[in-house]
Image 1 (tube, rainbow, N blue to C red):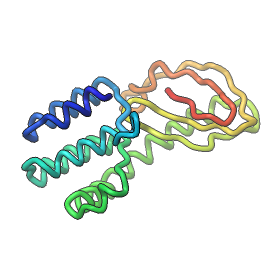
Image 2: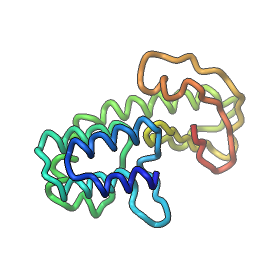
Image 3: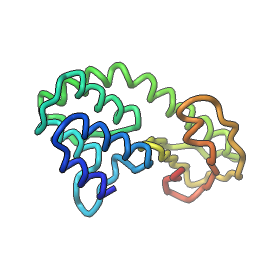
Length: 170
C-alpha cells in the first residue's frame, strides 16, 4: 500500500493518477487502511487531485471508481468545496448500488449462522469484505456459488469464520 501511495505523490497528470489508481485497485489494496499514522490511499488520491490540473469529469471518474470500491474519505478532505460537490453528487448516484452489495453480503453472512446470532455490521474496502457477528454466533464453512457480479466475483473464495467480537476479513 505504501508503494501505491508514494506513486500517487509522484504523479504529475490525471492520466498517471488514473494508471496508479487502476493498478492499486487491481492489486487489491485496502483503500481505506491507514499505515503508520499516514492517510489512506483514497485520501492520498483525493489530495493529489487538488494539486494537479483535473477536469470535472476526470475528478468524477476517479472518485466514482474509489467510491464503488468502498472508499471512505476523511472529514477534512470533504470540507474542500471542490471535492465535496463531486462526492455529494456521486454519493446519491452510487449509494443504491453499494447498499445492494452490502445487503447481499449481509444475507450471505446470515445464511451461515446456525443459531440465534446476528450479523451486526458489514463493510467493503476494495476487494476486502468485512462482517461483524454477534458474540453468540455459530456457523460453518459453506461454499459460495458465484454469480456474475462484482460482489460474487470478489467472494468466490469466501469462507465463514466466526470470531467473537471481531470483524471477519474476506
